[in-house]
Image 1 (cartoon, rainbow, N blue to C red):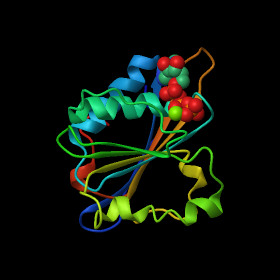
Image 2: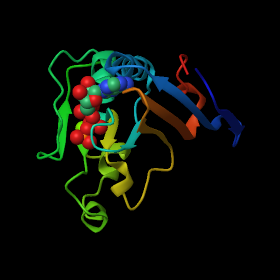
Image 3: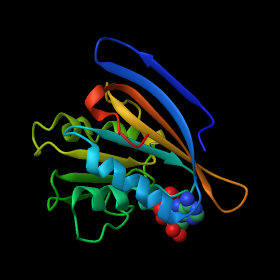
Length: 169
Ligand SMILES: Nc1ncnc2c1ncn2[C@@H]1O[C@H](COP(=O)(O)OP(=O)(O)OP(=O)(O)O)[C@@H](O)[C@H]1O
Ligand SMILES: [Mg+2]
């Protein structure tokens, strides 16, 4: 299942890490999200990239489930951001699809991951390729279509604390 694994220690406690996994169906995408939702620590940022329909929202729905959110998680394509406060940590779900990079720059997205003006939580951003800047530490999930209706996820941890490394990865 794993066809690439690279791990590099950047300091005593921070890691860069890339792994590719196959997600056979929507349930597998959802279950990966659950694993994230159960183990992510406050302030984690998940950057989701991939073509239309690649499974980004499905993954965030799993994250919500893993955090203990029972409310249904719907794509914030038009609302830009949906906030869910029911789970063990708040979930901020953003979708940048309708924006261009310069517009994204004006949004002060760091408000969400710095957690100064909002209650600190988990930030999940669809169409993260539209971001002109990124947080200093993040988890990126790049979803692509497989040949048989499946999906592949390339998961990269960038400067993540050891505590953010998900046991199932
Ligand atoms: N691993 C998978 N294998 C097959 N189908 C999947 C997989 N993961 C998700 N799907 C399905 O793909 C469809 C699109 O999923 P989803 O809405 O999550 O994609 P998205 O990347 O958020 O799309 P958009 O680009 O519109 O935001 C859904 O029907 C979902 O059930
Ligand atoms: Mg979506």
